[in-house]
Length: 158
Ligand code: SME
Image 1: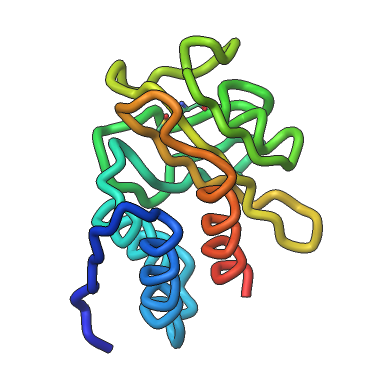
Image 2: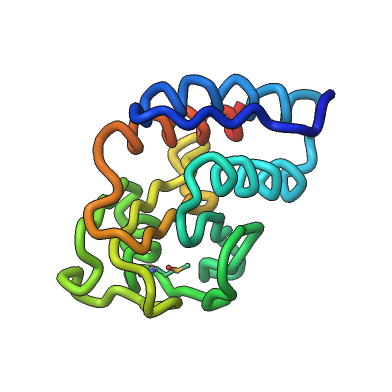
């Protein structure tokens, strides 16, 4: 497997996801170590999109515990229902937050974060963790990100 990613810089983020996702699939195929795959997925998303922070929290001992990520240091443990990540875990649903200052209970790991998307990683109806992306721009994330990041999560679950 080639370790270099082909990063395309077009205006269309759909095109960027469409170029990146097969590369992520190739990166993780043949490797069954979850942490290794989550680490490479974080790096690939960061390299393509340049978001402030992108990574994973994994459910361990009734808490979300920080997993592989790219970006500034982050809080290590989040309880169910707390912050955007804890809500995504508790409700097993995706949250798109256009302005983190308007999300009650948002956990500010970085003061530079302005908007965020969090998707649950669901396997057989159980949330194993979340994928979290944060941006220094307001309203960075929308349904396009939800659609394609869900595909990334499907690759993990597969
Ligand atoms: N903002 C998140 C916490 C995780 S960090 O952003 C990396 C939240 O409110 O759950």
